[in-house]
Length: 407
Image 1 (spheres, one colour):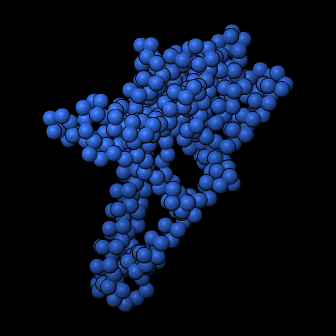
Image 2: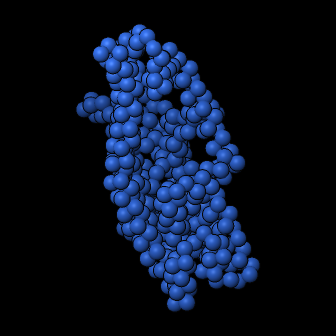
Image 3: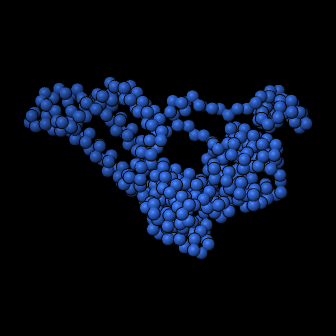
């Protein structure tokens, strides 16, 4: 099966365009004629790829995000609940999907299912679009006959994840705007205002104050060597991006995330929230604990925690230790989280306790983001005041000295 894009004319002569899945070009034309639509142009659609830029180390977004996954799994669950077969469900979702790359992927999934593959195996062929967690839960759903319930749980999971990410993005918009605006103001003053009074200051006759000399040197450097600064900044960005894609770079980045004061608290909460939410969803859906732990370790997105989780998996699988004890031995999980997991194990309600942990951590993350956002404004005002104060003092000091000499 392939995805074809077409331009066509309807019976009454109105132009029409869209996409259609078929095994060959002739079959695609036959499908269009059966709908009384006559193709003018028909070609295989390919998602636009920028692999060349990736080789230069530039980060590119691949696949789809949590919000799109939530929409897909919700549609899938709703249509399956109406006892519609996989083939028709996928075809209906393909028609409603606007992202060309995802259309192509879904067309291949539909083709594999029609050829007799399990749905989970068809998903597994496209790991960029379908995460390991979704594949494992789909496989569990097909085995247990609970695919509708599991797709619904996945939709809830990805909706919660998308909501948290959206909250974090919203919390960062204002601080980033303030930072960019402040830098633009300082840059304007240094490159436009300062050069207009530099000649007056240099004709002062005596030695200028240190702060004034620093300000003039900074202004001259930005005006005369802006191209070198841009080249150096671009080179540093590309080198840093490439380094962070290596194993050593990722480990260093993850360790720094857990070492920076203030940020490490939020980072730990985010990692634990993802872990608890993912493990709760998997356990509730009937995924075996070891497999659930492996998948949960992957979504942590931190090498330090992932390495600790390998030891946890070995302790639970090989040594038979309780999950709460294994987590406590890592030294990375708070004691209250370990205690709640221990209660869940004792009462056979591990998924419920993990969900409670996830909900609590989500609230704490929201509170932390709100506090950080409200604290950022006075800090930025203070920093801007110090920078502008330095510029004003550097300009006024020689003028005051000049007035004293003239007086």
